[in-house]
Length: 321
Image 1: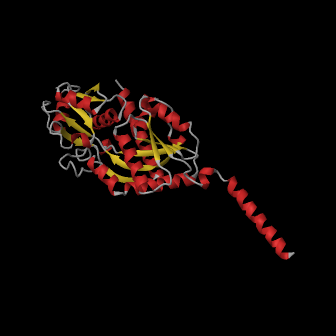
Image 2: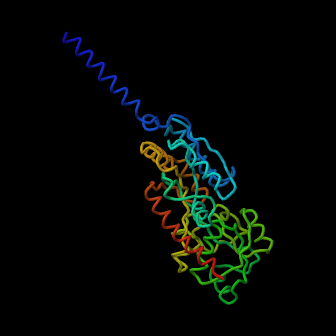
Image 3: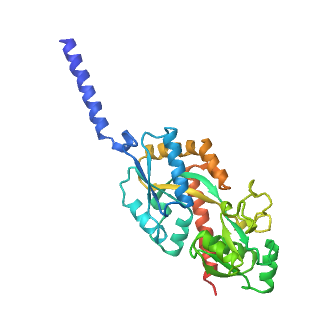
């Protein structure tokens, strides 16, 4: 009798444990349970898309997750449609997004409904900082030349960049700090901006490090990075030039809808951190002249809030006549 009762109690305990396990959300009990969708709010082939694919490949090659990352591109609309897609997805951590500080600019400009409080940061994988460069026929060779010209004749130089993009806001922040002003014209792609500089239709534009490395047709005159680049050691930083508040660091920002299971956050963040440390990912960022660093989710969120405040201040100044 005792043996039979013990057996029954044991079976009851197993049944209770099974029921308790069944009560757990699937994402918490076994994450990931299917391939993870990564929304990229840009067309294929751009920088953010390339980062997403390099990270995804490193995760797969090194078996950092049990399921692969599947990239879904949703370009256009300032990221509004891509963000809406993210926020309408199940809060299970199996639909995430890779964005940049374009998200913050979109918020300030009222494009879409992005809000830091509605997302959870999974961390950032890599950082890039733009540069100001001039064309060969501009007659300018340094930031000091630009500053002197614009202080003598405000608006006498033409700056080309994408309206409502980092190219516009980073440049505007530097001008506001230096007390100078250009005439801004639209040129969305790096190819368009370079064509305008080379054709003498513009004087200044903002480029990524990769766009000026090895390009003898463009003269970089100021880097927005906190410190000089190893690949472009002769280019002074805006901080060195006397304008530290104009520094701009753009992280590759992974996010998900707020409310996903903590296990999903931890699992994804750990995979991203390990992916950035792989030789192939380090080589990728080095090739682009950028930094292969991982910043955890809470710090990524804190930095985003600081940048949002700075963008709002820049935008307020830009609205003044």
